[in-house]
Amino acid sequence: MSKPSVAVIMGGTSFERDFSLKSGKLVCDLLEASGHEVMPLDADSNLVDTLRSEKPDVAFVTIHGAGGEDGSVPSLLEFLRIPYVGSRPPVCRASWNKSDIPFVMRRAYGPEESVAIWPAEVVLPASAFRDLGAAKALDLVADRIGSGFPLAVKPACGGSAMGVSKVEEEGELGEAIMAALAFDDSVIIQEWVDGVELSVAVIGEPGDAQVLPPVEIHMTEGLYDTSSRIDPMCVEHFCPVRPESLSADGEVADSCRSEIERAALEVFEAFGCRDMARVDMIWDGAAARILDLKVFPGLTDTSLVPMAVSAAGIDMADLLDEMVACAYERGC
Image 1 (cartoon, one colour):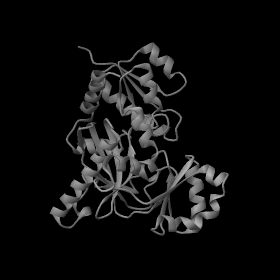
Image 2 (cartoon, rainbow, N blue to C red):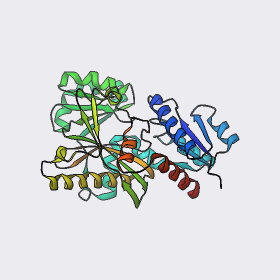
Image 3 (cartoon, one colour):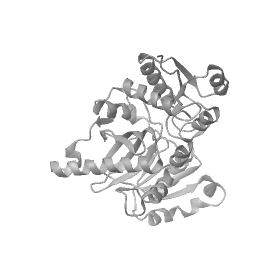
Image 4 (cartoon, rainbow, N blue to C red):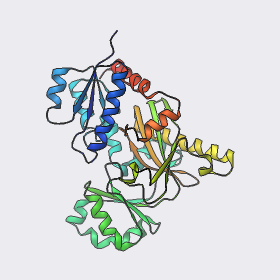
């Protein structure tokens, strides 16, 4: 029996287009090697015509940022009744704005039941600065957050660390906010959290999901921003996370890792993700501080999810093949 044909949808018009094209190429190569007929499709104005004429059995979404993670392409695929790999539109919309993560978690677990927590933050739309004079109240930010400086400033939506800044003093806030608003129409000003930076991939379905080994992100210099993510001179990755990064005591380190993995699973379950997602967090020495949820994470040769898949002893081609088969079976 022939395997389902797959349209791999990539690119689009988001700021993360180049990363998406690289993810799409890897997925195409692996699915072709597994025996699928693969159609690489850019998410442009011809997408609907192509999908309707070619009639793929399954779509695999590899769009990062707007168009994919905001739920646009998944919504389109459901409208066209094409089964696809990835989370459904309501999940995408709920996870698209990072500032909504605490509300989803509280709704799912209540204020005390989850091991996952999040940094204190202030969220302001561009219109508050453009129309309402919010720039005149930046002296209040540190007090409202309650942690003092430094602070993290970033776009409310989007990924690849685009528009992210570490702000050491009040005088730097205005420039950092403008940099973040270049990528989105809302900005998050957040407590800066020191600790072990981690990315934890989860695969499967709600109620039957598997947490993959956490990836530790160790900066040798600078901030973990867009450019440093792909520069081996700036960053080292360890998968699984090194026990000594969590504690000098082996048993304590094992307990910390269990908390980290549980936090990632709780986020995955709370949002109702399916197939594959990545939870980014900081382990502050006592708890997992959740920073982001990526429902269509990067799948390039240097991305974090493939590292975790390999560390788990799973063949990436087999995993993608299984996800396509599951999507085909469940339909749309």
